[in-house]
Amino acid sequence: MKRLLIIFSVVILTLVVISSLALAMEKKGDVIILKAACDHQEDYSTVQGLYLMGKLTEKWTNGRIKIDVYPGAVLGSEKETIEQTQMGVIDINRVSVSPVISVYPKMAVFALPYIFASREHMWEVLEGEIGQTMLSEIEPTGFIGLAYMDSGARSFYTVKKPINSPADLKGMKIRTQKSPVMMDMVEAMGGKPVPMAFEEVYSALQTGVIDGAENNPPSYYETSHYEVAKFYSLDGHAMVPEITLMSTKTWNALSDTDKQIIKMAAIAAQELQRKLWLKDEVTSMNKVIEAGCKISTPEKGPFMEAVKPVYEKYASEYLELIEKIQSLAK
Ligand code: BDP
Image (cartoon, rainbow, N blue to C red; front, side):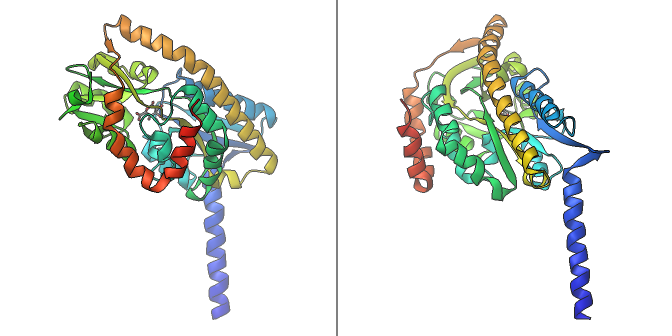
């Protein structure tokens, strides 16, 4: 009887493992089709990066692996697609680091307000030991960190008035990503954080559910948020990188050669996106100015002062890492 029970449980376990791999790896004949999610629209730099990743992967595997890119959050919000990536339903996912913090808390240091002194400082960290270690340390949470992408600096945009200092945020309902660090930051500045999916922000601004949000210029433009929140106050409070993740379930079903190919293609995507990003930052700012948005550049000092409690909260756990990051600022 006991022997039967053991055989039965081994059979069940094997079926579960095979079905979960099957879930992750759709196949059409000998061709593996990987699903890639992104919540930006077709012509956004992150989606263009994923398209290149697909093209190179198909070329370097002689057509054995194809990547179907699903832009525009058609597979769900970032929080939803992160869960689906962990389950292996989605194979590749380009997301902001912010929502990844809930599954990999250490990455909060990359979303701390003003942690990066410049774009060059951010890439020095991401491409160096700190960023690369994070890409490998994330594995136990169900993801392989393949590469990063640029997301510039995030600033407040509001419906009724500009944000010239943190005092202007007092009592304002400000949308944030579903991320503790972003919520803590808005709260420290005197605002009321309203965590919400990216896709819901436009109507929330339009209907007055929120008084404002915060993001980089290409996102502010691409989502048309500039139409309903015309005051863009460039306090540059956070430079939150993007990250390209692969489901560990998908990764483990690939050969070592194919793993290397996917990794190289993701890095090529990162490099293309960085180039496109620099151009998009300029063009999107010009477009929102042409559309009559009121751009202001408030003094950063008071904002940096206001967010000190956020550092104190995260420094208790990640002080050494934060100091290492800050030491790399030229
Ligand atoms: C954009 C990121 C995108 C996030 C969005 C947000 O590229 O991944 O979903 O911000 O604020 O800058 O949710």
